[in-house]
Length: 329
Length: 190
Image: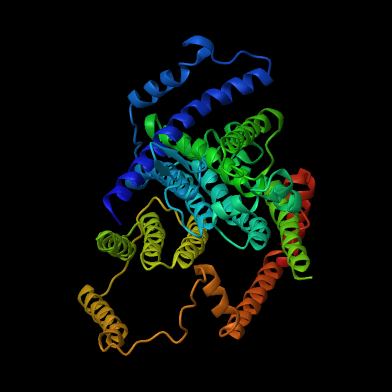
């Protein structure tokens, strides 16, 4: 544990924090533009060229807005809940390799903060804690809509964690490791080696569960605008509300990285092309989140539970059993 | 040095969190502090190099405490303080301090007398999850399978108890049907 290692780690953490906070802000801009184009509108156009400075305008608005703590809320938890969502989203990023290793001025950089052997499990576990922020925000604000949203959060948490875990079990069995770098190296041989060809069911299941984990549109029940106002965020204002958003968008980016690394070959053999391909894959998955929001209606809570327990979970279990049998014989 | 800093930081955090869990009158504080304490405990596994167990600690306890939240939501207004009826707080304090001290003495006595050895030597080159798997599927196979069977029994029982009217969905029924079924239920109860 020398000084160079410490400094390198701190620099990496700061860089990842800065890049993904900025991307979370830009993510809202992309979302508005993509949704607008799909609905034959222009989206934000007034602030800056093509509305690009809208992000800055939103940021200024959120930072300078009054931070209201309503009466009757459980103030300490109400104040702390948004921090949980934002902080755990960035904590989860510690075990994700964002880029193949590269050399700058003769110094080899590994763009991963903590290369542990249980990377994948760690990412999923810490990402799951992020739902606590929504739950606590909903329960602490004395509001019936927020409470409904909190109940939905805990239902989604308890059921979709099962699908995420079981669907990833089969790829983990094949690769024989939890490390995302091992996953990447296993698929380094090119397109034909990608795990999506041997594990298509797990890929689809995990992708669906990713929508539930991040609370994106087909499963956007946690903050369903037309029935429960903004759910957990109803009583929030200013930057506390903004932190929920940063957490949600950062989670979308990180789960896109996980899907690309686990199923679609990640950064391949580590060359420049592989690195660019990883960014293209992540962009596609992020775009898909927005695409689904424009194209699909929300499901009802009971349909969500039906889908999880009666369709996805049996499929995931069958997938694990079949994978085990094939590997045995 | 880093390990010492991390250990003392997380030790203090864990103790503070569990103290809040016991002392507070607010259900929401208690549940949140419990969840936070459980997650902070995982840090000790990470410090000891047992990464796999640390992550399992996080996954299991976030899920378990989340279920407690659901119960809390159903049974009380979690934003209000709970009125507790305490007897003599002196006796409670004394007994809990005594039992805490005894627990520490019981568990630290073998460590202090340095008679403690690992029965199963660590396997060279095996990763964390591999060594857990090896012990689990050789030495502890029977308890492991027994636990699995018990969980299966509990799951089947849960489904049987909860799933009586699962083929009907209130959202899909017409208003008259719901009223009719309510009337039918009343007759059965009477």
